[in-house]
Image (tube, rainbow, N blue to C red; front, side, top):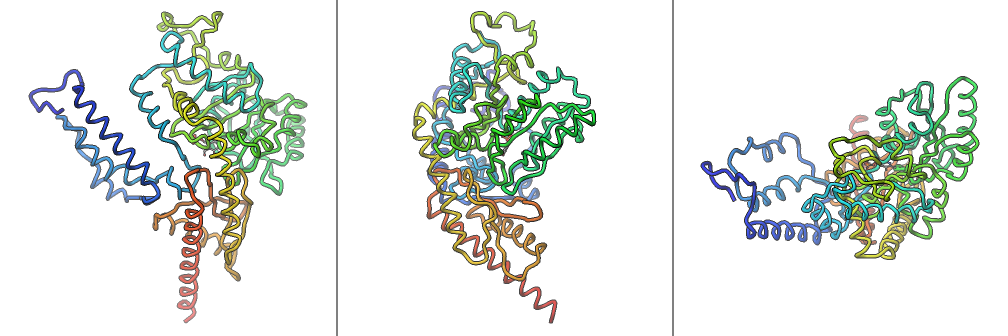
Length: 491
Ligand SMILES: Cc1ncc(COP(=O)(O)O)c(C=O)c1O
């Protein structure tokens, strides 16, 4: 494949045999990786120095055989990466993914469709509209709601809040205020910053005892702000907070948003997907009424990165916000009167790939019932983990299993809160170093807590048991070290 110094590969082409041998090798690598996940180390972190030493290379002037480069990539590069679809990766929001969607990602790049103006990809655009409509239907939103796929939850929140700014404020943001709970994901504040809002225009509302937004405090704040001359314009609710899986009281938020004439955006990037299960539908039925919703297939709908989705109650608002005249694209612009949709006018990106395909192909392959049962299983995993942990010494369950998220901490008796916080943070570092299972910490008020997010349907009870044993081992080791330090400082 390298033509040597004297003969550059001017067409940047491989022969059919070369394409096949590279493709087969890539597939073999992925099949091996995917089928041996549970035997692998979950977290592998290299120091910058070590990574530079093994990875950094000079700019390549001559080419070389890509098959030969695959070994380097798998051994040096991919190897130093947390395995987010590992059955014992419980940190942050895992991405369980699935192999069908991985293959769809290959098709997406291979065909390289651009879903911008209608005539550029009328087939892929129709399939995207169809797939978005499945999500709309699952969330119970009305038929004239619509949306688009974006890179993830951050982009979905940004898109929705840009629409809110356009529709409610006609982009005149001075004096306007947005309300969210203190547990709202940081991507919303980041989006508001990008949209020009200052920090004092984003008001964090207190939480109730269940880590949900306190609606009475919210209403009081909105009314006080109005009296003081602020212009309240938007409430951001949560459908599954990242830290505890809490779902804000969406029905009450909807009531407040209607009476106060505010936009209601719900960040369901993590939790909204649970609407496909009976239990989730019960907790999330009021999503049907929101003005905009973020829902992330690359989290709990088992897709590889990157695919998020934004749904807008009145889909016309998307084009009102983002529609532009692209004079240089007029040859391929679709006719809205003929129902032809130019998806670049429904969001921020012009060049958009066909990310919808991965959700479509995996849903068609496995069927919604399989997704539902996978998700039900993962909801049960969190409850099982809770039971296992509650049976251990020195463990306090801080928030119960909720939308597959559980928080807890180790509380050896006689320790100060400061020492407990340090201990629980150290447990995560111990686990990262050990590498056989991975969880993360979060902060609930003054408390550092440990957090398990159990959304991988390939996690077994044995994986949970193993992880809980490992955590106990970490805690025992660190508690002993602490006692030894105390003894030596005394003596
Ligand atoms: C509730 C919530 N919103 C938004 C995001 C941001 O999503 P992304 O990382 O896909 O941009 C996350 C990420 O975990 C999340 O949990």
